[in-house]
Length: 345
Ligand code: FAD
Ligand code: EPU
Image (cartoon, rainbow, N blue to C red; front, side):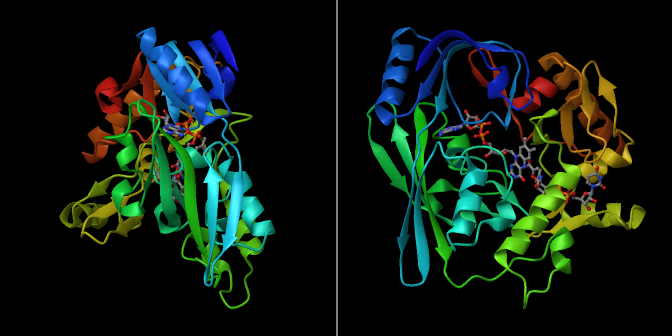
């Protein structure tokens, strides 16, 4: 389906009132290639979108927005593992629930993450002690210019914390069309985060982990169907061991997570909270009062309200702690993605 000048309000979870010059709902790979060729001919920008749960539109998009609707889940039983081939337009949480129901656990810690399966590798989604890279077997990447599909193994995806090669080398002219997942038949629970530590590893079931994750998320993350938001607005910053030690001397209860490379990850939500910014509002945009890392569309916010609030949060945290937060959310201008740090500087 293809539409001229369409509203993107229902296609971004911030629910910002922006439009696209053209909107294409692509159910097949051929439609994706055609939409790309048409945009190339018109010399117009082109943006692939999933559920819009990790984007901030700064203004109307002056080209084609293509929504990925490729569907299908195939499961194959191996000796020790389940192999899943999932089309990129499947909803992530639906996949988590489906695999659990079919007796293929392993994704339950990532329950309720909004968005599509095809978007999951882009920032290597993660929650409650697991990241996509731990279960990813391959990513199928369509080259829109040649029509070829390249099956990429996880090493080639260059996964990191909220990072992958899809944010860089393969950002323009490529679409993720399917993801392969590998789930161990021998399930072992991951119970090292938050309330999950209260569960008994000997008796706990995958369903109980799923329920606990959903309950934790619902207790602090606003539901985008009710209050517009894009999850964590900033990434958790990583600092040197010396910086972390210095800060811990001053704030002994500061949450901190030592990393394998010697760096220490800090909690951006805690830093923002310490600046007493919970509930702080600029125009219609506000810092969520349950989880300070989430910026919300509290009252008919404009894109400019969200940007002004993000700037204020970033500057306040930098003044107090000397740490410059970097957005996790992708900033989209009229002709494509912009450097989010530059927009906020
Ligand atoms: P979109 O926002 O539509 O797109 C994201 C980016 O990927 C855009 O730049 C887009 O151009 C590009 N893109 C989309 N699809 C494709 C494709 N098929 N091929 C190539 N490029 C593409 N994230 C976490 O990691 N962990 C969490 O716990 C988490 N919790 C969240 C909670 C809430 C309430 C919300 C609103 C968001 C949360 N997020 C979380 C962020 C978000 O859910 C993920 O980033 C998700 O993967 C985005 O999926 P999407 O389909 O909405 O992507
Ligand atoms: N905290 C505060 N005040 C706040 C918010 C957090 O003190 O307002 C403290 C918490 O008490 C906790 C620590 O900060 O000690 C971390 O908070 P939380 O467990 O809520 O996790 P987070 O670091 O804020 C990250 C991810 C989430 C993911 C959760 C669970 C990032 C940027 N965010 O949040 O992912 O769901 O861990 O694993 O890494 C997203 O990416 O959009 C997202 C929601």
